[in-house]
Amino acid sequence: MNGETANRINRRLVMRIAFGVVILGLIAGLAGVFIFRNVLRPGQQQRVINIVPFMEIFLWRPPEDYTLPTPLPSTSEISPEDLLSTTLEIPAPTATEEAAREVEEIEIAETPAATLAP
Image (cartoon, rainbow, N blue to C red; front, side, top):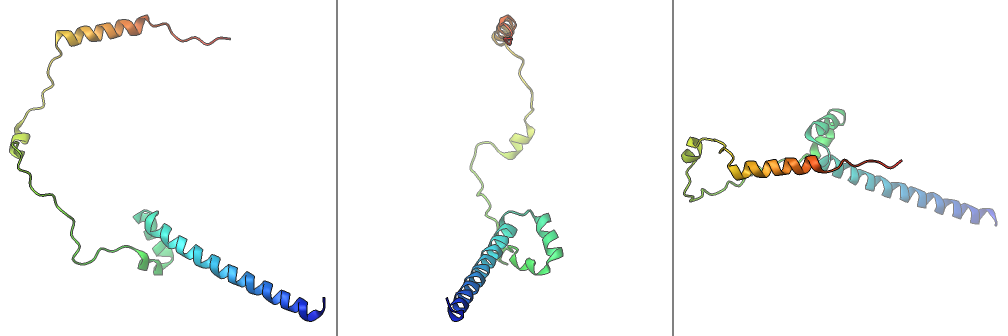
């Protein structure tokens, strides 16, 4: 190979490397913005903004006429006042429930404990 051919190969290699570095930089920048907006919590976002102030541009801000949807009032037979006036008493267990508990306790006590073989 003569000097001119080697020179061309070196220029092509340098151009390919430079192009690759630019592409990788763009991908890394887009990934950073995505992570900033979607992964970081607000406190972490604020830390990044304190270090790199231009990152505030990438925060999501709602439009001025943005409103949250509110549910329509339901036409239920139970009113909120009825719910507030109810007492929260737990009913006493019946005899059949107590008997079922005793049977469960007996069954648990009678099951052999698992032993490990040496």
